[in-house]
Image (cartoon, rainbow, N blue to C red; front, side, top):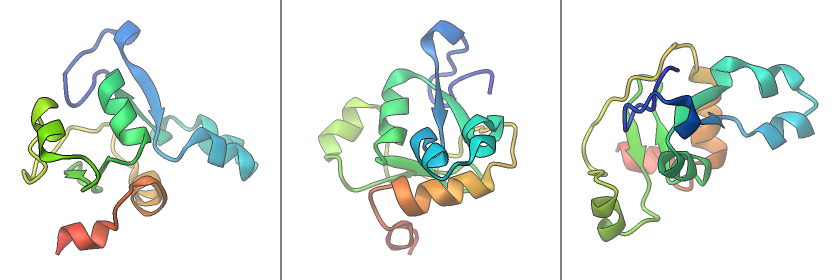
Length: 117
C-alpha cells in the first residue's frame, strides 16, 4: 500500500506496516509464509495502526471501515471518525479477504455480526 487509507500520508517514515493477522500468531503457527506475505499487511499511520492492532477497528472485505464499541463517542470524535458512517477505505492491492476474516474473528474486540445487523 502506498499510503495510509485514513490520512493519505505516503511518507514511509511515518507509516507502519501493520500485520492483519498478527505476526506473532503466524510465527506461533509456524507459518512464515503468512508472516511475510505482503497481502497480510496494511500501511497505516501510527494512531490508526494502534486502533487496528488493538482491535478497535476492522474492515469488511470491500474496505468498509467497522468501528467497535470499546471506545467512547468522545474518543471517536477526537479521532475524526464517525463510527456509524459506512466509510470505504481504499485498501489495495485487494485479495486480503482471508486475513481480514481472521482479523474480524480473532483480533476485533466486538462480534462483527452484532454490528452488521
